[in-house]
Length: 327
Image (cartoon, rainbow, N blue to C red; front, side, top):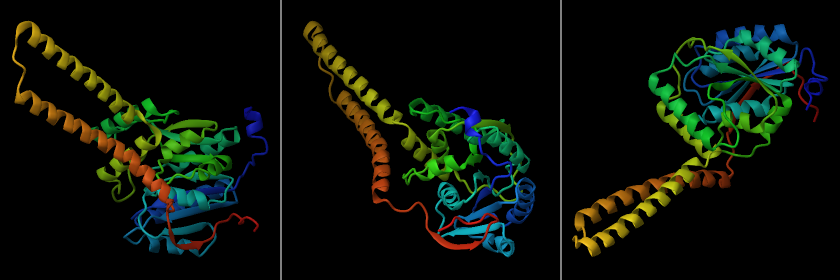
């Protein structure tokens, strides 16, 4: 599509929905909502902030309540902690804007980038994504794990997934509708953003330090998200293990043939129980690991066929400054 056709009819001041997932962010939300409301008012008269409470255990709900008295802020409370991917999906599904902005509640995503994102959208981009300048603020273990993960997933993925692009982005309504049409329950949104395509513009930024508190993403959660992304967007582990099985079978055949030839020509005795025991232990480990990898994919299939909802809402409150669609 020609960029000129893409931005034809795009409003100078579109309706903007801003989705903010929050898990135990009571200390950060008041200042964020104050700054974000002012930033959106400067961009358009039609806007809404959708705070998605992902089963918080602190006073997140109480921190949002004062903002619900006037139009502008909407509050969605999930019935339990479903995870950030589900919270973002809930916010995207309830967003009414012409464009949808995703940002975290911890204050690390600079609001000064919102006008630049909007300018990119007006110029024809369907999505404007913020990409980290560097990961110097992360531990070496997390940097290594992130680099390894994206190398593996991109080696087997049909579409490249940018390694340093997160959830901080602006999306056109067409991109949002495309994401909502995807039925999968095991959601790895960074991969889905890339999979739906559309014209995407990237801008560089460096996350600010957290305003307060600490990240709720533990190592176990990061590992679970990585497994979801790997199994959702790459068959490389299955292919690698199939290749390993073929190599081991070939080597085993060659070793057996060598034993027979050596015995017939040199009269060497056939190796006894140590060779058998070591071989059994090695191949048992390979088989168990193979079953585990296969089980990860089968487990994802089992989750999908149950067709449980991605999230459940416990409460909705507040209203935006965007008129709801006609029934």
